[in-house]
Image (cartoon, rainbow, N blue to C red):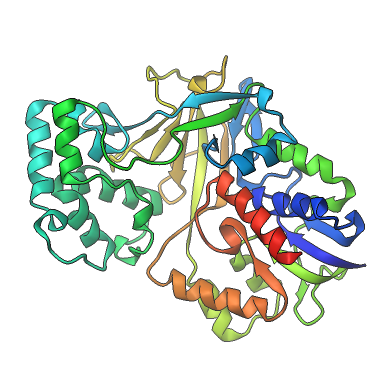
Length: 398
């Protein structure tokens, strides 16, 4: 079967590309979307557990800042089917919940602790005018000081990625909250946050469903254009034929490039680049207990606790019970109740990633293959960014 566009993966990016192409006038019989799962949505799929939804990829929420993305998604799940919340995330420091980010909220600690944190940041390299280092660990000390580094940032990242932190690059750290020593001092004096704070200040979550509902509806609206339960088994690069069934003018790849190693004849230099792309696998575990907290999610940096984050679903889904945890699979204990394992959860920003993914994307374009989304570009993307990416790629294709 000959088609114009074949999209691998029905996550937020793949679904958005498909619907954007249709809105540009591409005929349904010119387009195919393939996904190995029985339900569309990728990491944003939801499953009912103990009477309420769990998002199997961890906590996913719809940020309200991108109005064009909201308009796009409201076509499938209208605005009146969402609740809006003021974001609340916290960090457990010495058994006490402190609002995130820590550097903007140390005023919530005791006076003695505030002085210790302020003293540490005042002695940091970024405050003392030292040149910015090129390694991740040194950068954390340079930017945030010894106390925040040792009590939160380094142990948390070690838990989440479960690899040697010297392998992590620094090129992505501009995405972190930017809170200066002056901002920290100001916040302690006025007892409120200062500085450039994280995204998701406000977010939307469905009233009656898990977050996966919007993607399920998007998949349903594609009809026969979406083929589920269809893992990719073979890709012929010369003819752009997938599984021996569909031959495309262009392929858009949103699945992990590491899956291409077993499905396509990739040259050794590109195989080597793909093998440099690292990822974290995460277990999502449901806990029936009720936690006394107003947070939507809680970060846990302690090394003796296996999980790194808790999602309190009762605080963003009315009538829900319990919470769920996220744990790197290398730290997971024995399964006790509901667990969902995501082999591909987070791309890791290693030192070697930028060069490796550039090589892969340039090679793929030579065959008429475009990488898009979290796994196609090996870039961590929130779902609103992934939708925006899908809309951009569709416009580029047209």
